[in-house]
Image 1 (cartoon, helix red, strand yellow):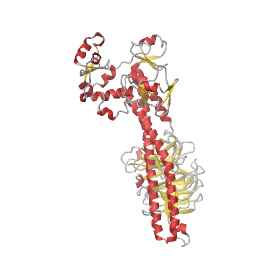
Image 2: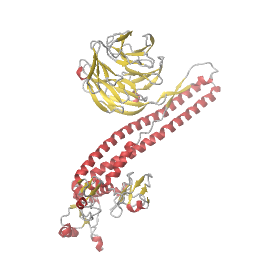
Image 3: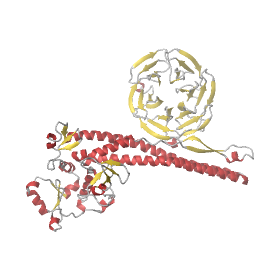
Image 4: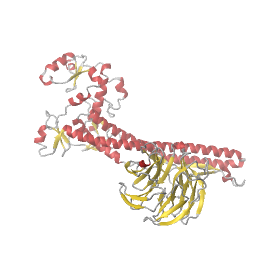
Length: 628
């Protein structure tokens, strides 16, 4: 019955050992890795009570009664062949026994035989088959009888060969017949087959959903890894080009030095690519296995009868759970080369040739989520507390300030719950796990639990954005205010630090602190950040209005790296993230619009060093940064 269309996907319906198609005499047997082989071939690979997969070397324990039939392959093969019946000549399965080759016109769903017109008539008269369902080739190819075809499939009890499987023993986890319920499985918890199948479908659907979620995450990581790989190549080519341009300006004696740098640069490129390619390959293997297992379970539920599904699902379910438990490959540390030239004396050849700097980290996007927003709403603040991520949703006072809220995500960015806080301005998590919420310069601060219950109110504490310093004190600044206030957790004011804006304050400021006690204010009104020590003395000012390095066109939230103490600042009008040294010097742009970020509003670091970025439009992105 082979056709050209079936041959196009013969690998799926062909035993990879003997290269013969599955059929009545070549029954596909499935292993726990979800690879299948014909019964004759795989039996030769068995060693005692187990068999090693010839393809992937995964060991499968052979259950009592032998390996399970892969009904998914059988049903997919039947379904495909049924759609092709109108395009081919199929001979009667009964007449060949009498030395004849007569064209078939129907198929019996119970016997699985193709019948000619004469055998069809006899089939309808014979007592054992008079109630069988016969479908014409046109009916089979139409696809309108899938449910009837599934329900017509009968699985017989292995213990009582003439009895249909109608029940499922929950203790032994096997489909059984009526006789089994009163003999071998007496006093066991036995339920109807359809009930057991529905219970299993619920579990399998949950596994499929988990697989879809993990596949989405793996695809994001794979795409980000591919992007980093391309950046490594592009940056290497760019640096190589810049170095050679500079070399051309030097006298002949510099050539040897330049070539040395080129050699080192190319070695660096190869080392970087060698580091990232195994990770990418492992991601592709995980995605392939997970996609295969997902399709297996989906096809199992779509094509198999209840009994077939219950007989087959165990290995698929076990394989899926194993794949879901596999850890996502650790991402390699990758450094992108950068090229700078420092004018020096004529005899300083290395400096004349330029310097290759590989300290810039390569951010890899490992998760991207989205928080649905209403009219006038934007994301504007984020904190990573270890187990959860707190994201602030802002709405303008002229719109719907009563819709401001804190959305609580798990550490991988999946939404857990939300806390509605009308007229909220800022928030920060407290040491006891509660959340401090500010309500602007004319109101108060409230402490609430993560389920939204009011715990405490500090009526004399007023401000806008807030954070905690190293002494667990509230540090706050407010709209229209030229000061930063520090309060104890009981609401007692500890100090006031003067922070003057040269421009009118119309946009609220952001604030963060360092482990040394410094306070850093992001002032979008003046297009700069200002850093103060714990005593309130100005340490430095960074930024001015503009679009170049060291310049802002309206910036937002900021944070400091837990190890390097570098300052990371969102600039949302130019769609980029500045990285500034602890002394206030521009280092580089970590992310730009070319990297896919759009209106970045706030950033923070997770305890394990991942960068969490929220965009005004609702995106929450988590980046793995290479070791700096």
